[in-house]
Length: 138
View 1: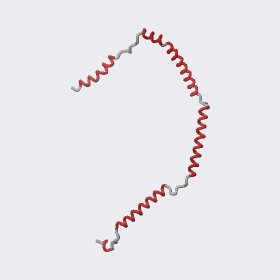
View 2: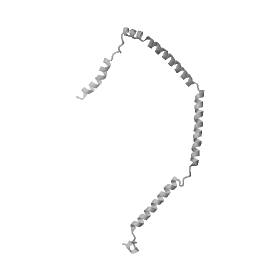
View 3: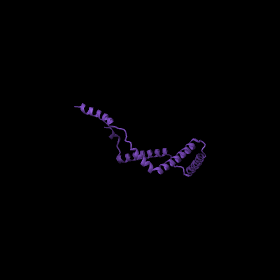
View 4: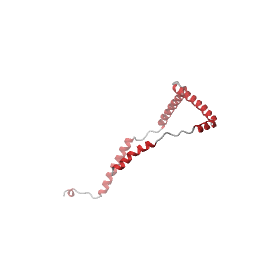
C-alpha cells in the first residue's frame, strides 16, 4: 500500500525526461523574411555593439591604469575635508562648558539619595512611639 506512491514519485522524473525534446527551430523562410525587413535595425545594432565595445575597452584601460590623477584629486579633497571636520569637532568640544558631574559621580549621588530617602521613610514609618528596652525582651 505504501510502496505505490513511492514508486509513482520515482517514475515521474523519468517520464518528464522522456517527454523533453529539442527546441523547435523556426522555418528558414521566416528567418530570411525577418532578416530582410530588419536589415537597417541589424546595421544599427552592429554599430551600437562596436561603440559599446570601444567604451568597454576604454574603461578597462582606465581601470588598469593605477596612476589615475582624478581619483587622487578626489582623495586629496576628501582628506582635506576630513581634517577640516576634525578641527571643527575639536573646536565645538572645547567651546562646550565642562560638565558639573561625571557619570560615575551622578550614579554615586543617586545611590546616596536613595539610601537617605529609605532611611527617612523607615524612621517615619516606625512612628513616634519608641520601644523601651524591656519591650525588646520577650
